[in-house]
Length: 224
Ligand SMILES: [Zn+2]
Image (cartoon, rainbow, N blue to C red; front, side, top):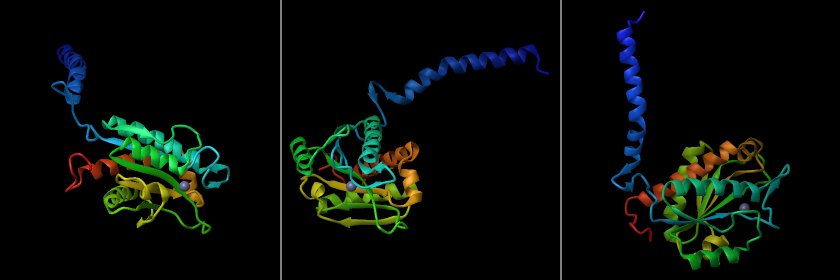
């Protein structure tokens, strides 16, 4: 049994810790007046949730690609803003936006990078995993960073990083990549893709890939 003196010491310690913790937490978040640990501060990122409105994208068992891509993209936006980025979205609701409009918006607003989020489908229901695409040589490091972050973050099958003249990454003038984050046609992956927790894991992996892209050796400070 503890003596009253020990109890008083314990209580004092607990009270001290309770009083000290908030200021300790504040001190780790701020260095002087500058918030620290914001690796995407000063970056502008365009997120493009695939499809939308009259274009549902691929579908399976009532699940629509356009809904999944929007949900992932909105989570990604929150992640990126927490890391200090300014985020622009080609759509933030279920709206019809043409591919040309997405490209025009990107070229007019000149973000540092463009990331398009899609969900895949195959007639072979055994096919699963992630793919990322690039078109211009300057976009390859972005496609590579997203790919590796998705594979390690999701522990899923690594399919490929590939060159492809998809419209949104073909006509954008900044580093641009399109990520196919999983197959709606695969039963196991479909169950994951429609869940809120897995969509968050996808968003977290994409944001990690974006941080890695800007931090890569040889990456210029401005991102261009
Ligand atoms: Zn798609």
